[in-house]
Image 1 (cartoon, one colour):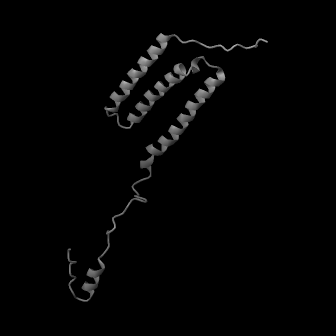
Image 2: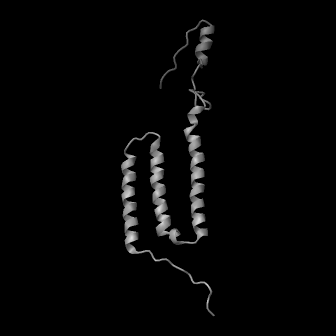
Image 3: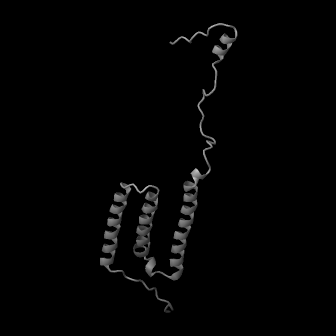
Length: 136
């Protein structure tokens, strides 16, 4: 019996792998270089853009998604779409934190703020001077 479909495997030439590997190394160096520069709020955006490009090279060439079936390509693209949704929701919370105002909310308050020492208050009521506690 012969099978009706043959598995078609695309063979990628070695120079392509070497070029992709060299590109990944250069982009890793660019990522490290950019980490030392100050772009303000754009630091994370630049780092994620470089990382997404590197990940797409790995997925397309080393995982052979470029030459895979349309269903495999769709699953791969939807994985990146889901990642973008999660990062968008996370960054929307991070970038809008300061929109609320200056209400400290549940921020920690000092323990002795407005507190009067009990011994000093009693002594002042009776006309006595409060003694300082002895240090050991």
